[in-house]
Length: 591
Image (cartoon, rainbow, N blue to C red; front, side, top):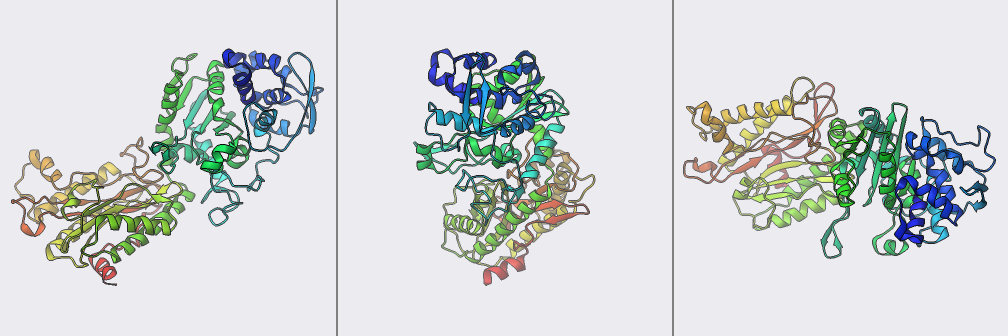
């Protein structure tokens, strides 16, 4: 299909045909043998119903009549069998075209794609699903730089067999299998990756992959898509659509993995150019093999941009895949837990270094630069989100990110920040004195918030506790604390209690944490805590500078946030090494 599309687009741009007739038209029209090989190569990825209406005889190798040579088109593992069959063909195998003529195609080394119109380009692309080596732990890709780190080029980051740091090929396969098994038969999944965003004109932001796409594939380049098909419990496939190699663009933007190597790199059943997504998707939707199309937000935007409306297409019902994805992602695998430990530890060490360098006269912006530098020095690829670096009363603005004031002697500084390490994030908040010593009022309020946090963390264990219940628990503790400190009246009525406490504590106790800082947004906060879940616990009290407030507390904002992993018997504080008690903070700042 890949080669057919380009043949039509180049040779007959005004006569592009619907995908259902592409193969027949192109076989009559094509002059390059690469096209007929491509048809044979990709035939098995088409839905069963479509292949029943379009017999395979036109695509089979000449003389292929024995069971060892004829490609098996059974519904089970169709793509794996086809890939194996094409790989086993002799280097100079003759193929039958639709008209009955013969041609011979030498197996040449796949090089960079120089143009869509050249025979070498087509030959290179059609071999993308017939890799010269089977899927192995480490693969045997050519020695070159790819569009992202590979164990052969970045051995300081990855071990053999890992697709991304800390995550193996088998782990990504298990994730895809878990998603497919959670779906009904006759389901088709389309998940689109992120696009490259521009900061201005032609200046790009650093690329950040869509989390759901990254979770399933490990692919970390723009403009990519994946399809997971499930015709029944025994027939499923993983198709990956990526950018083609382009010597000119790679000279400017850096290397790309490309179509040829993507199959082996990411363990896909088939890899194709992103330009082929429309055609392959339409073939699947036209086939009558699917009742459900599940897509992510990026795919929804892509379909709208391409004016493809799958809703009602042969009865196919469109829905979001994200509830299914987030039901999986809310429970972290062992590999994910290790990555989160790593990023939480490096972020905790970075906080201690920032505390040590804090002094009156420095600016919020300089502390922003400090946490950014220390996290990256520790291995983070970026900060997970724009940090809050709020001195004094700025801490009462929950998402204060201007970070442009001078730090004053006698104020507190609230920092909410964390690094990101290859898709996984830390989210830490600490509050400390600019001059290194808490005043009596600051200390009293800080230890009150710390006590609330400790009691909330103690509730984090498998069982009946949920995020929603934990928040209610934190509200009860906060109300009692505010009354004890004289910030709320003891005689306050139930009717006015909600508005009263929200004046000082307007946010929730926490959220799920993982590949996104505010992770798995489609996962309910009523899910009982279970082993593998990771969340934040972040109580806070924010006191306005009002005349009805005791003077020792006016204008003080305090939040303390840690990252918690639910274990089999309780919890693990992933940010334990970040200074938190008054004595720990003052000791670090004094050093």
